[in-house]
Amino acid sequence: MTEVQLQEFKLDPDSELRFEVESKNEKVVLEVKSGYAELFGTELVKGKPYEFHTGAKVAVFTWHGCTVELRGKTEVSYVAKETPMVVYLNVHAALEQQRVAAEQESTRGPVTMVVGPGDVGKSTLTRILLNYAVRMGRRPIYVDLDVGQGSISTPGTVGALLVERPASIEEGFSQQAPLVYHFGYSHPGENLELYNTIVSRLAEVIAERCENNKKASTSGVIINTCGWIKGSGYKVLSHAAQAFEVDVILVLDNERLYNELKRDMPKFVKVVYLPKSGGVVERSSTQRAEARDARIREYFYGKRTPYYPHSFDVKFSDLKIYKVGAPSLPSSCMPLGMRAEDALTKLVTVWPSPALQHRLLAVSFAAGPEDDVLHSNLAGFVCVTAVDMDRQMITILSPQPRPLPNTVLLLSELQYMDNH
Ligand SMILES: Nc1ncnc2c1ncn2[C@@H]1O[C@H](COP(=O)(O)OP(=O)(O)OP(=O)(O)O)[C@@H](O)[C@H]1O
Image 1 (cartoon, helix red, strand yellow):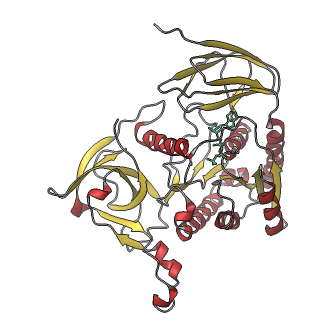
Image 2 (tube, protein in one colour):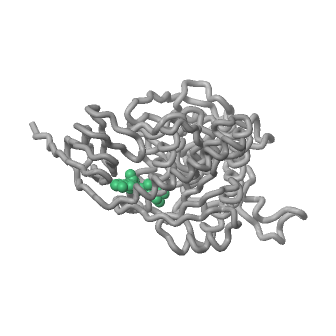
Image 3 (spheres, protein in one colour):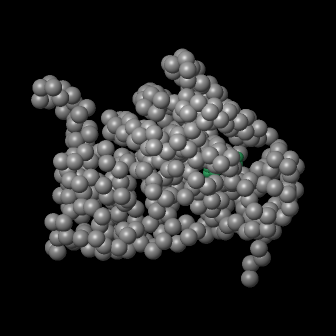
Protein backbone atom coordinates (compact mmCIF):
# COMPACT_ATOMS: atom_id res chain seq x y z
CA MET A 1 0.00 0.00 0.00
CA THR A 2 1.34 3.46 -0.85
CA GLU A 3 1.59 5.88 2.00
CA VAL A 4 -0.72 8.91 1.87
CA GLN A 5 1.27 12.12 2.04
CA LEU A 6 0.04 14.33 4.88
CA GLN A 7 0.96 18.00 5.27
CA GLU A 8 -0.18 20.49 7.86
CA PHE A 9 0.05 24.25 7.37
CA LYS A 10 -0.40 27.03 9.92
CA LEU A 11 -1.57 30.17 8.17
CA ASP A 12 -1.23 33.66 9.68
CA PRO A 13 -4.03 36.16 9.16
CA ASP A 14 -4.16 37.58 5.62
CA SER A 15 -2.15 34.79 3.98
CA GLU A 16 -2.94 31.89 1.67
CA LEU A 17 -1.95 28.31 1.04
CA ARG A 18 -1.46 27.59 -2.65
CA PHE A 19 -1.26 24.12 -4.10
CA GLU A 20 -1.50 22.32 -7.41
CA VAL A 21 -2.45 18.75 -8.22
CA GLU A 22 -0.58 17.64 -11.32
CA SER A 23 -0.05 13.87 -11.34
CA LYS A 24 -2.53 11.84 -13.36
CA ASN A 25 -5.45 10.31 -11.42
CA GLU A 26 -4.31 12.03 -8.23
CA LYS A 27 -6.64 13.14 -5.48
CA VAL A 28 -5.82 15.63 -2.74
CA VAL A 29 -8.07 16.10 0.26
CA LEU A 30 -8.15 19.44 2.05
CA GLU A 31 -9.47 19.96 5.56
CA VAL A 32 -9.55 23.04 7.79
CA LYS A 33 -8.56 21.88 11.27
CA SER A 34 -9.02 25.15 13.13
CA GLY A 35 -9.78 28.81 12.39
CA TYR A 36 -11.56 30.22 9.36
CA ALA A 37 -10.61 29.96 5.70
CA GLU A 38 -12.16 30.51 2.28
CA LEU A 39 -11.51 29.29 -1.22
CA PHE A 40 -11.96 31.93 -3.94
CA GLY A 41 -14.59 33.59 -1.75
CA THR A 42 -16.48 30.48 -0.57
CA GLU A 43 -16.19 29.72 3.15
CA LEU A 44 -14.70 26.33 4.01
CA VAL A 45 -16.45 24.29 6.68
CA LYS A 46 -14.19 23.22 9.53
CA GLY A 47 -13.59 19.46 9.65
CA LYS A 48 -15.18 18.83 6.24
CA PRO A 49 -12.97 17.05 3.67
CA TYR A 50 -12.84 18.67 0.19
CA GLU A 51 -11.44 16.73 -2.75
CA PHE A 52 -9.31 18.14 -5.57
CA HIS A 53 -8.29 16.24 -8.64
CA THR A 54 -5.61 16.43 -11.36
CA GLY A 55 -5.32 19.93 -12.82
CA ALA A 56 -6.60 21.75 -9.71
CA LYS A 57 -4.81 25.01 -8.88
CA VAL A 58 -6.04 26.22 -5.56
CA ALA A 59 -5.60 28.98 -2.98
CA VAL A 60 -6.98 28.72 0.56
CA PHE A 61 -7.09 32.20 1.99
CA THR A 62 -7.62 33.22 5.60
CA TRP A 63 -8.50 36.64 7.04
CA HIS A 64 -8.10 35.51 10.66
CA GLY A 65 -5.56 32.65 10.59
CA CYS A 66 -6.15 28.90 10.46
CA THR A 67 -4.61 25.44 10.36
CA VAL A 68 -5.13 23.40 7.20
CA GLU A 69 -4.31 19.80 6.41
CA LEU A 70 -3.62 18.35 2.93
CA ARG A 71 -3.75 14.62 2.27
CA GLY A 72 -2.36 13.35 -1.03
CA LYS A 73 0.39 14.28 -3.47
CA THR A 74 0.68 17.95 -4.42
CA GLU A 75 3.28 19.14 -6.94
CA VAL A 76 3.49 22.55 -5.35
CA SER A 77 2.27 23.64 -1.93
CA TYR A 78 3.40 26.79 -0.15
CA VAL A 79 2.09 29.58 2.03
CA ALA A 80 2.12 33.09 0.52
CA LYS A 81 1.88 36.19 2.67
CA GLU A 82 1.62 38.63 -0.24
CA THR A 83 -1.84 38.52 -1.79
CA PRO A 84 -4.07 41.15 -3.40
CA MET A 85 -7.08 39.99 -1.36
CA VAL A 86 -7.37 43.25 0.64
CA VAL A 87 -7.54 45.18 -2.64
CA TYR A 88 -10.20 42.78 -3.98
CA LEU A 89 -12.15 43.14 -0.73
CA ASN A 90 -12.07 46.91 -1.14
CA VAL A 91 -13.48 46.55 -4.66
CA HIS A 92 -16.26 44.42 -3.21
CA ALA A 93 -16.96 47.07 -0.53
CA ALA A 94 -17.18 49.80 -3.22
CA LEU A 95 -19.60 47.67 -5.29
CA GLU A 96 -21.62 47.00 -2.15
CA GLN A 97 -21.99 50.75 -1.57
CA GLN A 98 -23.34 51.11 -5.09
CA ARG A 99 -25.82 48.28 -4.43
CA VAL A 100 -27.05 50.01 -1.28
CA ALA A 101 -27.50 53.24 -3.25
CA ALA A 102 -29.31 51.34 -6.03
CA GLU A 103 -31.65 49.83 -3.46
CA GLN A 104 -32.46 53.21 -1.91
CA GLU A 105 -32.99 54.93 -5.23
CA SER A 106 -34.63 51.95 -6.99
CA THR A 107 -32.05 52.02 -9.74
CA ARG A 108 -29.78 49.42 -11.29
CA GLY A 109 -26.86 48.01 -9.26
CA PRO A 110 -23.28 48.11 -10.57
CA VAL A 111 -22.50 46.32 -13.83
CA THR A 112 -18.85 45.30 -13.55
CA MET A 113 -16.63 43.84 -16.24
CA VAL A 114 -13.36 42.05 -15.42
CA VAL A 115 -10.74 42.33 -18.18
CA GLY A 116 -7.07 41.54 -18.67
CA PRO A 117 -4.73 39.29 -20.66
CA GLY A 118 -4.75 35.50 -20.33
CA ASP A 119 -3.91 33.92 -16.99
CA VAL A 120 -4.18 36.89 -14.68
CA GLY A 121 -7.02 35.52 -12.56
CA LYS A 122 -10.08 37.11 -14.26
CA SER A 123 -12.31 34.09 -13.64
CA THR A 124 -11.03 33.82 -10.08
CA LEU A 125 -11.70 37.50 -9.29
CA THR A 126 -15.18 37.18 -10.84
CA ARG A 127 -15.86 34.19 -8.61
CA ILE A 128 -14.57 35.99 -5.49
CA LEU A 129 -16.71 39.09 -6.13
CA LEU A 130 -19.83 37.01 -6.84
CA ASN A 131 -19.27 34.94 -3.70
CA TYR A 132 -18.77 38.02 -1.52
CA ALA A 133 -21.92 39.59 -2.96
CA VAL A 134 -24.06 36.51 -2.39
CA ARG A 135 -22.66 36.13 1.14
CA MET A 136 -24.04 39.64 1.80
CA GLY A 137 -27.49 38.41 0.77
CA ARG A 138 -27.28 39.78 -2.82
CA ARG A 139 -28.41 37.94 -5.94
CA PRO A 140 -25.92 39.07 -8.60
CA ILE A 141 -25.93 37.94 -12.21
CA TYR A 142 -22.82 36.19 -13.42
CA VAL A 143 -22.06 36.65 -17.11
CA ASP A 144 -19.32 34.66 -18.80
CA LEU A 145 -18.18 35.90 -22.21
CA ASP A 146 -15.09 33.69 -22.26
CA VAL A 147 -15.85 31.22 -25.06
CA GLY A 148 -12.52 29.43 -24.53
CA GLN A 149 -12.44 28.76 -20.79
CA GLY A 150 -15.92 29.73 -19.68
CA SER A 151 -17.57 27.98 -16.79
CA ILE A 152 -21.23 28.22 -17.81
CA SER A 153 -22.53 25.36 -20.01
CA THR A 154 -19.81 24.19 -22.44
CA PRO A 155 -16.94 26.05 -24.14
CA GLY A 156 -18.02 27.81 -27.35
CA THR A 157 -20.93 29.61 -25.69
CA VAL A 158 -21.62 32.84 -23.82
CA GLY A 159 -23.98 32.65 -20.89
CA ALA A 160 -25.39 34.01 -17.69
CA LEU A 161 -26.54 32.67 -14.32
CA LEU A 162 -28.43 34.17 -11.42
CA VAL A 163 -26.18 33.48 -8.43
CA GLU A 164 -28.24 32.54 -5.39
CA ARG A 165 -25.62 30.83 -3.23
CA PRO A 166 -21.84 30.78 -3.03
CA ALA A 167 -19.97 28.58 -5.50
CA SER A 168 -19.54 25.02 -4.31
CA ILE A 169 -15.86 24.37 -3.51
CA GLU A 170 -15.66 21.36 -5.82
CA GLU A 171 -18.30 22.16 -8.47
CA GLY A 172 -18.41 25.94 -8.84
CA PHE A 173 -21.66 27.89 -9.23
CA SER A 174 -24.93 25.98 -9.48
CA GLN A 175 -25.86 25.68 -13.15
CA GLN A 176 -29.62 25.84 -12.69
CA ALA A 177 -31.45 27.45 -15.60
CA PRO A 178 -28.51 29.22 -17.25
CA LEU A 179 -29.12 31.55 -20.16
CA VAL A 180 -26.84 30.31 -22.94
CA TYR A 181 -26.15 31.42 -26.54
CA HIS A 182 -24.36 29.48 -29.22
CA PHE A 183 -21.05 30.66 -30.67
CA GLY A 184 -19.45 27.40 -31.76
CA TYR A 185 -15.74 28.28 -31.55
CA SER A 186 -13.27 28.60 -28.70
CA HIS A 187 -11.99 32.03 -29.82
CA PRO A 188 -14.08 35.15 -30.57
CA GLY A 189 -11.81 35.97 -33.55
CA GLU A 190 -13.28 33.00 -35.48
CA ASN A 191 -16.45 35.00 -36.14
CA LEU A 192 -16.42 38.52 -34.67
CA GLU A 193 -19.78 39.44 -36.15
CA LEU A 194 -21.51 36.46 -34.53
CA TYR A 195 -19.71 37.01 -31.23
CA ASN A 196 -20.83 40.65 -31.03
CA THR A 197 -24.38 39.67 -32.05
CA ILE A 198 -24.78 37.13 -29.24
CA VAL A 199 -23.11 39.39 -26.68
CA SER A 200 -25.61 42.15 -27.54
CA ARG A 201 -28.47 39.66 -27.35
CA LEU A 202 -27.34 38.37 -23.93
CA ALA A 203 -27.08 41.96 -22.64
CA GLU A 204 -30.57 42.74 -23.94
CA VAL A 205 -32.16 39.67 -22.30
CA ILE A 206 -30.40 40.37 -18.98
CA ALA A 207 -31.63 43.97 -19.02
CA GLU A 208 -35.20 42.69 -19.62
CA ARG A 209 -34.93 40.12 -16.82
CA CYS A 210 -33.58 42.74 -14.41
CA GLU A 211 -36.67 44.84 -15.04
CA ASN A 212 -38.74 42.00 -13.58
CA ASN A 213 -36.37 41.04 -10.77
CA LYS A 214 -35.59 43.97 -8.50
CA LYS A 215 -33.29 41.98 -6.23
CA ALA A 216 -31.10 40.87 -9.15
CA SER A 217 -31.22 44.33 -10.65
CA THR A 218 -29.93 46.10 -7.51
CA SER A 219 -27.33 43.36 -6.94
CA GLY A 220 -25.81 44.08 -10.36
CA VAL A 221 -23.90 42.03 -12.88
CA ILE A 222 -20.32 40.72 -12.92
CA ILE A 223 -18.91 39.89 -16.34
CA ASN A 224 -15.91 37.68 -17.01
CA THR A 225 -14.21 38.15 -20.39
CA CYS A 226 -11.63 36.44 -22.63
CA GLY A 227 -7.94 37.25 -22.39
CA TRP A 228 -7.82 38.62 -25.96
CA ILE A 229 -7.11 42.31 -25.47
CA LYS A 230 -5.22 43.56 -28.53
CA GLY A 231 -6.51 44.76 -31.92
CA SER A 232 -9.89 43.18 -32.62
CA GLY A 233 -9.83 41.75 -29.09
CA TYR A 234 -9.93 45.29 -27.72
CA LYS A 235 -12.84 46.16 -30.02
CA VAL A 236 -14.72 43.10 -28.78
CA LEU A 237 -14.22 44.24 -25.17
CA SER A 238 -15.35 47.80 -25.98
CA HIS A 239 -18.42 46.40 -27.71
CA ALA A 240 -19.28 44.25 -24.68
CA ALA A 241 -18.81 47.25 -22.35
CA GLN A 242 -21.23 49.23 -24.48
CA ALA A 243 -23.76 46.41 -24.87
CA PHE A 244 -23.94 45.79 -21.12
CA GLU A 245 -23.70 49.52 -20.31
CA VAL A 246 -21.03 48.76 -17.75
CA ASP A 247 -20.39 51.07 -14.81
CA VAL A 248 -17.09 49.61 -13.67
CA ILE A 249 -14.22 47.94 -15.54
CA LEU A 250 -11.64 46.11 -13.44
CA VAL A 251 -8.38 45.78 -15.38
CA LEU A 252 -6.09 43.06 -14.11
CA ASP A 253 -2.36 43.45 -14.59
CA ASN A 254 -2.18 45.35 -17.88
CA GLU A 255 -1.37 49.06 -17.87
CA ARG A 256 -1.73 49.47 -21.60
CA LEU A 257 -5.27 48.09 -21.57
CA TYR A 258 -6.05 50.24 -18.52
CA ASN A 259 -4.89 53.40 -20.30
CA GLU A 260 -6.69 52.54 -23.52
CA LEU A 261 -9.95 51.97 -21.66
CA LYS A 262 -9.51 55.12 -19.59
CA ARG A 263 -9.07 57.06 -22.83
CA ASP A 264 -11.94 55.47 -24.75
CA MET A 265 -14.67 54.78 -22.20
CA PRO A 266 -17.25 57.46 -21.36
CA LYS A 267 -16.42 59.44 -18.21
CA PHE A 268 -19.10 57.77 -16.06
CA VAL A 269 -17.41 54.36 -16.47
CA LYS A 270 -14.96 53.79 -13.63
CA VAL A 271 -11.86 52.05 -14.94
CA VAL A 272 -9.86 50.54 -12.07
CA TYR A 273 -6.40 48.98 -12.25
CA LEU A 274 -5.87 45.91 -10.07
CA PRO A 275 -2.80 43.78 -9.41
CA LYS A 276 -2.91 40.09 -10.24
CA SER A 277 -2.26 37.50 -7.58
CA GLY A 278 1.21 35.95 -7.61
CA GLY A 279 -0.55 32.61 -7.26
CA VAL A 280 -2.31 32.62 -10.63
CA VAL A 281 -0.90 29.82 -12.67
CA GLU A 282 -0.09 30.22 -16.36
CA ARG A 283 -1.48 27.52 -18.60
CA SER A 284 -0.02 26.25 -21.86
CA SER A 285 -2.26 25.88 -24.90
CA THR A 286 -2.30 22.11 -24.27
CA GLN A 287 -3.48 22.66 -20.71
CA ARG A 288 -6.17 25.04 -21.98
CA ALA A 289 -7.35 22.45 -24.51
CA GLU A 290 -7.38 19.84 -21.74
CA ALA A 291 -9.39 22.17 -19.50
CA ARG A 292 -11.92 22.67 -22.34
CA ASP A 293 -12.19 18.92 -22.78
CA ALA A 294 -12.65 18.41 -19.05
CA ARG A 295 -15.38 21.06 -19.03
CA ILE A 296 -17.31 19.24 -21.79
CA ARG A 297 -16.85 15.91 -20.01
CA GLU A 298 -18.19 17.52 -16.85
CA TYR A 299 -21.20 18.80 -18.79
CA PHE A 300 -22.20 15.25 -19.70
CA TYR A 301 -20.86 13.21 -16.78
CA GLY A 302 -20.80 15.69 -13.87
CA LYS A 303 -17.92 16.52 -11.59
CA ARG A 304 -18.37 15.46 -7.98
CA THR A 305 -22.04 14.54 -8.40
CA PRO A 306 -22.11 12.03 -11.28
CA TYR A 307 -24.57 12.54 -14.16
CA TYR A 308 -25.76 9.65 -16.30
CA PRO A 309 -26.14 10.79 -19.91
CA HIS A 310 -28.19 8.86 -22.47
CA SER A 311 -27.11 7.48 -25.82
CA PHE A 312 -29.66 7.05 -28.61
CA ASP A 313 -30.10 7.05 -32.37
CA VAL A 314 -31.86 9.79 -34.33
CA LYS A 315 -32.85 9.61 -38.00
CA PHE A 316 -31.16 12.13 -40.30
CA SER A 317 -34.62 13.12 -41.50
CA ASP A 318 -35.68 14.09 -37.95
CA LEU A 319 -32.96 16.70 -37.60
CA LYS A 320 -32.26 20.14 -39.00
CA ILE A 321 -28.58 20.87 -38.51
CA TYR A 322 -27.15 24.31 -39.27
CA LYS A 323 -23.82 25.99 -39.09
CA VAL A 324 -23.72 29.73 -38.44
CA GLY A 325 -21.74 31.72 -41.01
CA ALA A 326 -21.48 31.36 -44.76
CA PRO A 327 -18.13 31.98 -46.46
CA SER A 328 -17.92 35.75 -46.85
CA LEU A 329 -17.91 37.19 -50.37
CA PRO A 330 -16.45 40.54 -51.38
CA SER A 331 -18.99 43.38 -50.95
CA SER A 332 -19.11 43.84 -54.74
CA CYS A 333 -20.66 40.37 -55.09
CA MET A 334 -23.34 40.91 -52.44
CA PRO A 335 -26.96 41.71 -53.26
CA LEU A 336 -27.82 45.38 -52.95
CA GLY A 337 -28.24 46.51 -49.33
CA MET A 338 -26.36 43.55 -47.84
CA ARG A 339 -23.00 43.84 -46.14
CA ALA A 340 -20.30 41.19 -46.56
CA GLU A 341 -20.41 40.71 -42.75
CA ASP A 342 -24.09 39.70 -42.90
CA ALA A 343 -22.97 36.35 -44.33
CA LEU A 344 -21.19 35.63 -41.06
CA THR A 345 -24.45 35.34 -39.16
CA LYS A 346 -26.37 33.41 -41.82
CA LEU A 347 -27.58 29.87 -41.18
CA VAL A 348 -26.19 27.28 -43.56
CA THR A 349 -27.70 23.79 -43.72
CA VAL A 350 -25.32 20.98 -42.79
CA TRP A 351 -25.99 17.55 -44.30
CA PRO A 352 -25.11 14.70 -41.96
CA SER A 353 -21.82 13.04 -42.84
CA PRO A 354 -19.08 11.13 -40.98
CA ALA A 355 -17.41 14.53 -40.41
CA LEU A 356 -20.00 15.15 -37.68
CA GLN A 357 -18.53 12.45 -35.46
CA HIS A 358 -17.35 13.79 -32.08
CA ARG A 359 -18.78 17.23 -32.77
CA LEU A 360 -20.98 19.06 -30.30
CA LEU A 361 -24.42 20.14 -31.46
CA ALA A 362 -26.27 22.91 -29.65
CA VAL A 363 -29.98 22.21 -29.19
CA SER A 364 -31.75 25.47 -29.86
CA PHE A 365 -35.02 26.69 -28.38
CA ALA A 366 -35.90 28.22 -31.77
CA ALA A 367 -39.11 26.79 -33.25
CA GLY A 368 -37.62 26.54 -36.75
CA PRO A 369 -34.95 27.98 -39.02
CA GLU A 370 -37.29 30.82 -39.95
CA ASP A 371 -37.36 31.76 -36.26
CA ASP A 372 -34.62 34.01 -34.94
CA VAL A 373 -32.22 31.14 -34.25
CA LEU A 374 -29.17 33.21 -33.27
CA HIS A 375 -31.22 35.18 -30.80
CA SER A 376 -32.75 32.08 -29.19
CA ASN A 377 -31.09 30.62 -26.15
CA LEU A 378 -30.05 27.01 -25.93
CA ALA A 379 -31.74 24.03 -24.30
CA GLY A 380 -28.36 22.31 -24.06
CA PHE A 381 -25.84 20.23 -25.98
CA VAL A 382 -25.53 16.77 -27.45
CA CYS A 383 -22.41 15.11 -28.82
CA VAL A 384 -22.38 13.00 -31.99
CA THR A 385 -20.75 9.67 -31.11
CA ALA A 386 -21.40 7.83 -34.41
CA VAL A 387 -22.77 8.49 -37.90
CA ASP A 388 -24.27 5.57 -39.83
CA MET A 389 -24.64 6.59 -43.46
CA ASP A 390 -26.25 3.25 -44.43
CA ARG A 391 -29.02 3.46 -41.85
CA GLN A 392 -29.18 7.26 -42.15
CA MET A 393 -28.87 7.60 -38.38
CA ILE A 394 -26.65 9.44 -35.97
CA THR A 395 -25.96 8.27 -32.42
CA ILE A 396 -25.85 11.02 -29.88
CA LEU A 397 -24.83 11.43 -26.26
CA SER A 398 -27.43 13.55 -24.53
CA PRO A 399 -27.91 14.75 -20.93
CA GLN A 400 -31.62 13.89 -21.29
CA PRO A 401 -33.40 10.77 -22.55
CA ARG A 402 -35.04 10.85 -25.98
CA PRO A 403 -36.74 12.66 -27.61
CA LEU A 404 -34.61 15.74 -28.21
CA PRO A 405 -36.38 18.84 -26.91
CA ASN A 406 -36.04 20.41 -30.36
CA THR A 407 -34.93 19.39 -33.83
CA VAL A 408 -33.07 22.61 -34.67
CA LEU A 409 -29.40 21.92 -33.95
CA LEU A 410 -26.40 24.19 -34.38
CA LEU A 411 -23.02 22.74 -35.24
CA SER A 412 -20.09 23.61 -33.00
CA GLU A 413 -16.43 23.42 -34.01
CA LEU A 414 -15.74 21.92 -30.59
CA GLN A 415 -15.20 18.22 -30.38
CA TYR A 416 -15.44 15.68 -27.61
CA MET A 417 -14.27 12.06 -27.73
CA ASP A 418 -16.62 10.10 -25.55
CA ASN A 419 -14.50 7.32 -24.12
CA HIS A 420 -16.14 7.18 -20.74
N1 LIG B 1 -4.14 32.88 -5.69
C1 LIG B 1 -4.08 31.77 -6.41
N2 LIG B 1 -3.32 30.73 -6.02
C2 LIG B 1 -3.24 29.59 -6.76
N3 LIG B 1 -3.88 29.40 -7.91
C3 LIG B 1 -4.65 30.40 -8.36
C4 LIG B 1 -4.81 31.63 -7.64
N4 LIG B 1 -5.65 32.44 -8.34
C5 LIG B 1 -6.00 31.74 -9.43
N5 LIG B 1 -5.41 30.53 -9.46
C6 LIG B 1 -5.52 29.49 -10.50
O1 LIG B 1 -4.87 29.98 -11.67
C7 LIG B 1 -5.54 29.51 -12.84
C8 LIG B 1 -5.84 30.68 -13.77
O2 LIG B 1 -6.74 31.58 -13.13
P1 LIG B 1 -8.03 32.17 -13.87
O3 LIG B 1 -8.74 31.09 -14.61
O4 LIG B 1 -8.78 32.94 -12.87
O5 LIG B 1 -7.31 33.14 -14.90
P2 LIG B 1 -7.98 33.89 -16.14
O6 LIG B 1 -7.29 35.18 -16.28
O7 LIG B 1 -9.45 33.89 -15.99
O8 LIG B 1 -7.58 32.90 -17.30
P3 LIG B 1 -8.09 32.93 -18.85
O9 LIG B 1 -7.05 33.66 -19.57
O10 LIG B 1 -8.16 31.49 -19.21
O11 LIG B 1 -9.44 33.57 -18.89
C9 LIG B 1 -6.80 28.80 -12.35
O12 LIG B 1 -6.57 27.41 -12.43
C10 LIG B 1 -6.97 29.24 -10.91
O13 LIG B 1 -7.55 28.24 -10.12
